[in-house]
Image 1 (tube, one colour):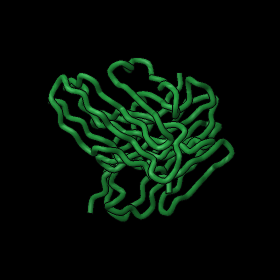
Image 2 (tube, chains in turn purple, red; image 1 turned 30 degrees about the vertical axis):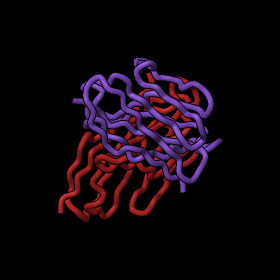
Image 3 (spheres, rainbow over the protein chains, first blue to last red; image 1 turned 90 degrees about the horizontal axis):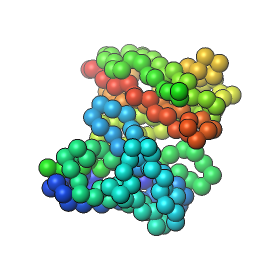
Image 4 (cartoon, chains in turn red, brown; image 1 turned 135 degrees about the horizontal axis):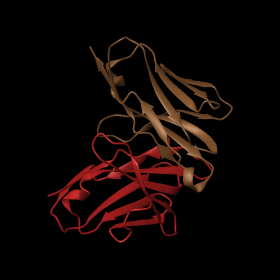
Length: 115
Length: 113
């Protein structure tokens, strides 16, 4: 149980385009979802926390207008990287928590390459 | 400042050998500590979780220890296998908003045949 999926697993796009990444909790309802970014050989960096039906809370230094997060249902959150640039190339990972619990279940990640 | 530091940064051992990874933290007030295993190009998978009152917890060949007084944790891997090659991340959670979830930088473990 507690499986989290991400789609797509990898994406290559041109600079200036927007990319949407989906995060789904497959067998549970996730009241809270987290979005992380991970650069090579570095640890995960929390970008934002989103609760279903409310606006996401962004970490300091993360541009909310560039990284749009939507958490419209208890099983789906999306991250849209708008006007992507090569420096946005990274590994994006989402996680989800069950209501009332702290354990985060991580998705498999999405590798974004912006050319 | 709330921090989580892991050592060593990387480690190479032969298959079948044991190893111990370290995690020191300054997160306060402390809530819990988790060890995750992250295979290359994959999301992290939880190995163990310990609260303040727990000193040790095992998950198969993985045994985590916690000393809340010295704010140190270790992850011991017994009889290593090639599939243990991964990054191991220590994550500490606190009760305050400033210390809610702090990730260590991880230890990259490579198992050689």
